[in-house]
Image 1 (cartoon, rainbow, N blue to C red):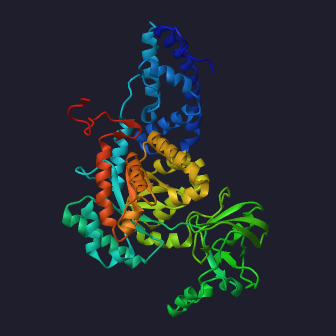
Image 2 (image 1 turned 90 degrees about the vertical axis):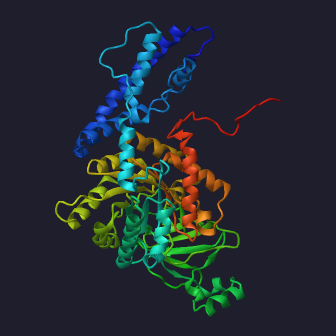
Image 3 (image 1 turned 135 degrees about the vertical axis):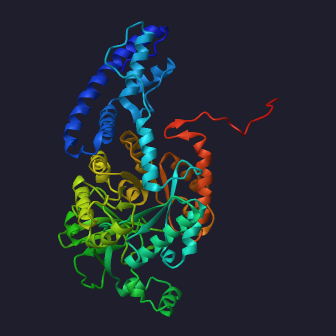
Amino acid sequence: MQDLLRPGIAAAGLAAELCERLETPRDTVTWEATVTLAGWEPALRGGAAFRARAENLAVYLAFRKQDLTAEQAALSALGLSSLGRSEAHVMATLDAVIATLQALAGEAPLAGRQPVAEAALARHVQHERDRIFGADPSGPETRIMVTLPSEAAEDPALVRGLIEAGATCVRINCAHDTPAAWRRMAGHARDAAAATGRDLRILMDLAGPKVRTLQVHMPKAFLEREKRKRVKRMREAGRDPLSMGPLLLPGDRFRLVRALSRAKDLPEATLSHPELLARTVTGGRLWFDDGKLSAVVVERDDDHALLQVETARDGGTRLPPEKGVNMPGVDMEIPALAEADLAALDTVVTLADAVGFSFVQTPDDIRALHAALDARLPEGAPRPAVVLKIETERAIRNLPRLIVMAGGAGPVAVMIARGDLAVEIGLARLAEIQEEILWICEAAGVPVVWATQVLEGLAKQGNPSRAEATDAAMGQRAECVMLNKGPHAAEAVVFLARILRRMDRHQSKKSPRLGPLRAWHGPQDL
């Protein structure tokens, strides 16, 4: 690419060259966005406001196909916007920059352009943030969601403590407990919000079709490697050591099977979705228990897969029943709504302000959720907001389509579910993808939830790490941060609110705020 910052080039000449260089991608972006919008037309029924958001998203997707890094450096040299913070108003920012370049070059601006970047999408995101996650005029700009533990069903004081600490949204995980317990949790939360004058929302998280181990068989030979004291403690606690799952080390082999044969040579495990055995490939890697164990497929057929452990914790990692299984790179053609989810929706529609949609992957999944909700809602009742949990590679690829399909029908937010997502795409890529999701959602005018293990050490052990504090600060760029349950969850809410307030002074999405620096006030004499 030609170097725009050539020695001796005058500002007017640079502006004229830049203007010419930006006009071509502008025309391309306009054409590609029009094509994209035509494909989205069936979902563009959410009114003028949603159409404007979809149009901006289509423009942003087309705009980010361009490589404008050389032009950015030249724009900065002229003291102009480098286009790097244009998510919420792409075309207006591009036209404003082109108009300024034309003025610098001594040319008349082209007619028919709208060179003023408006903050309409940013205002919409703030409105949707408060609508889905609660308003908090005296709190940080980023809302705080906290997961309720099972004890919350019987302990109103626990729930009130979380809300008084600063939570504006409570999460009920429908993968645990019972509908009766969910109703008690929601009742305690509503009562506490009324008593404290807080604006509160309830999000109910569907379990989704997470692939898990079901039955696990451990041959006695694998029990012999266990320390005798450990086996004795298990038996004294009334647990059968053989039912706890094998302790696996790198190099060990085990089988995934449709039905246990109780072989004497190797451990076996069945899957919650046995049809996925046919989707495994020799050489493919599977992850178990949120990435604690990985194994490579050595051989396979439609009824079994022989795996060899690749990574495990020092001393071994146990493979018990009911642990998650991730198959990176495999598009799992299973319904996003399991039977348990459909049953849970009977209660969810009576309690929830928002529904967390786990393992959503395609627009058809959203159609299925809408149909299930409509079948259960009283006539004329509005649907709860939908929070799209992005947990797979396929969901990442389909994210713009998921947003448009859900947003065209009602309030929508996106959760960066970094636990399963990290296992699916790898930790190294997660750092990049979570940024890109933030950008896509800002372009679409959609609130984002920063989730998974935020301040986990503080919530569970009462002691945050430096890395956790930094991660929490990064979450300020989202509209909501989710905390998990733990005995110190209320302390985590207070600590998180302090971090978010401090970061509000310095950052708004990708834009630094030039508030005064307070650490260096006073004389700076040497």
